[in-house]
Length: 280
Length: 206
Image 1 (cartoon, rainbow over the protein chains, first blue to last red):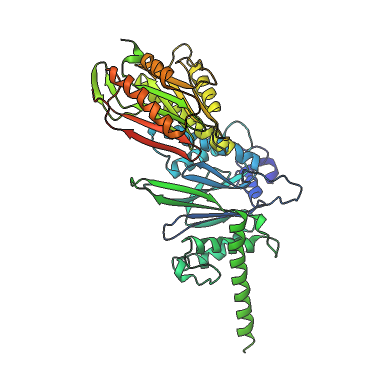
Image 2 (image 1 turned 90 degrees about the vertical axis):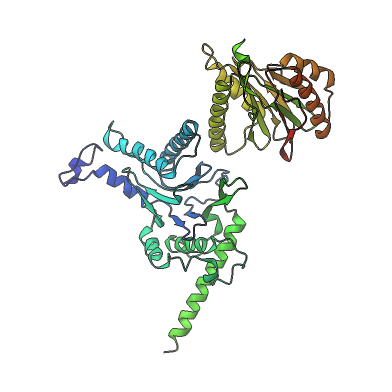
């Protein structure tokens, strides 16, 4: 029945749905998982993603596959068609610079997200063009609203999140977040993972949680650090009271360090459960 | 008074041995009246590149902001810092876009490329670039004095300290004789470790 109403973006179905837009959203569910977690203590944002294409023959790309900076204080994770994402990222970058040129202030994160979403929406209403098959996780900092995380989808809708998962198996990821995302869990001293040092990066528990989620959503049981892409967005206060936002992509060694910590912790938990259950 | 001399200001850049330096005055005026003595004309555009913009202040500000925009886009797209040579070409193209209604300002680019070779270059307001291998570039209201001073005092292969001293002498003497520029001076020395800034005391405050 929907066959008659799904050929064109600009036609509603009798049930009041835009099928092309929904099909575009389906495309995202086959993409590599992306996790975004805002640290509840205000130390920053952790963005983690699963890299899909890993072949030994692929030439290593200097520019990342999933994470892209938009400006000094905003970056994004991509889920969906990379080619569509490239166009939107270029638009976001130009938009951020135009705002900076006009107001001499960095663009507020929500403004940047809104303008990209309006751009996406116009492809669902005008011109007979197909929608963009991309969902983004935009992460950024501005002085008025602190650290923010936004999710956008092909329809042009966006929503703000404290933590979320998009892409393949996102439901599994979201259910882990429902139980594990809280302030006590994500504060360094409370998180008793002895595999990490004590002088740790305050984002460590959030990084560990992100890796834990990706391990669940990935389809392999032996994860390799080359399949992860982890980026941290943090801030430093400068001497002149200005805030410097730092965008830091973790290198392979650092990813391996956190990954090993999480894997060891998970194995320990499994052993504990196994031993307690045998006491009955 | 020429439109280029309305607001006043001067910039001078020189190369040394694996280092480059650029100096700016601090005056902003409206004709002969002084408005501010805290307006340096040089901005750092990258870890090892500085750009100085002289001429009509409103155009100098606009050229600086437009350059900042384009450099940011370059850095994000190419995931590397822009070399001084590419920056010069970009500034020159940007100036020529306004060939028949130009910006009344002339950028001076000074920096080290990624092999740490020093490079200075400048252009006029229509984007005509100078010599690629220039030893020094001068611009501003006292450009003729600056040219004379640099010609007399510059010598090749100076180390950063020598270069800063020579640049300071050239600038101070030229600024002191010019009523439309001066009111303070800052020197930026660029070496492979980055840009170090020094405000020079003791110049004539008139």
